[in-house]
Every structure is written in C-alpha cells, then in structure tokens.
Image (tube, rainbow, N blue to C red):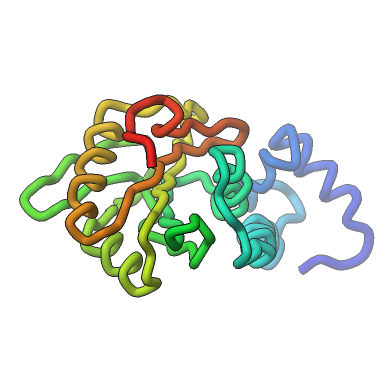
Length: 206
C-alpha cells in the first residue's frame, strides 16, 4: 500500500519507464518489478487512466452539435484517453446533428463481422474487437438517430485509414441507408491526430 513518503517510489517509476505516460501504460507485471511497488500500487496506477477517461467523457454535453471534424475530435478524445488497445465508438445524432448519445461498440484488436462478411485486421492488440453492424443499427435506432459517426483508434499512432477501413465505411454507409440512418463520418483517432474519412473524400457528403 501507499504510505509515508512516496517521492522515492515516484522517482524509481519515472526512471524505469521514462515518463508519466510510460508509467501509466506499463503492464502490471513490469510495474511489479519496480522495488516498492506492491499489488495495491499497481491497481491504483492502472485505475488512473480509466478514471480520467470516464471523468472527461462524463463532461461531454448532451447539447453538443457537430459542425466539423474538429468538433468530432473534441467529442471523441475523452473516450480514447489512455487506450492502448483498439476500441470503437458510435456517436448518434438527430437530423440537426445534435448529439443523442455515444455508445461503446467494441474493445481490443479489430475484427469486422457483417453477416457472411468477415475481415480480420490485426493492429497488434491482444484481444478480439468485434464491430457488429447489427449493434450499430440497434444502438442508432434505440436513440432515434438519423445520423451516426463511427470512431476507432489506431494504437500504432498512425491515423491513416487502411483499405479495410475504407471498405467497411462504405459497407456500413450502404447498409444503414435503407434504415433512414446516414453515416455522417468515420474518424480514426490517435493520441495526437485524427483522420476524418469524410474530409479525406472517402465518404459522401452529408
């Protein structure tokens, strides 16, 4: 447990991992190798990014109205805070692009599954991340959305969309149209960058 002067422990952690982000991103096994780091300290350190992400996401206003891709980055950034595995989220909007809600679709490395179509894409993450077209449609219809934005992150730090990203974007767009739901954008997030497939002309204008 943490008690007394934690300054020496903090210095040992920073020396071992190079920076605060390095400490927070380190695995529990690597953290436990640092002298003075016990199980409770490991749990506390791993909780910090998760708590911070939930705090930032909870401050997202329900009155958000999307005006451009910069506003999408502001919206989604808290949801990917501290993420080191690939995750995907769906933001749902009404006809005036007012935010209705944001829903987690999946977490882990990415496997797209749409009925008979399956395309596995490895991003170097340890677990399977399933983006389900049925879940996208269910969440959008449940909120009464007429427009949605799909967002996922690239833990590699490179936000450039792959050919699979572009293909799946078109597939989702075409599948949602008969339901009266427009795929407004698909954005790819990294810690310090974001690529909008709409701005990149990979998606028709809204």
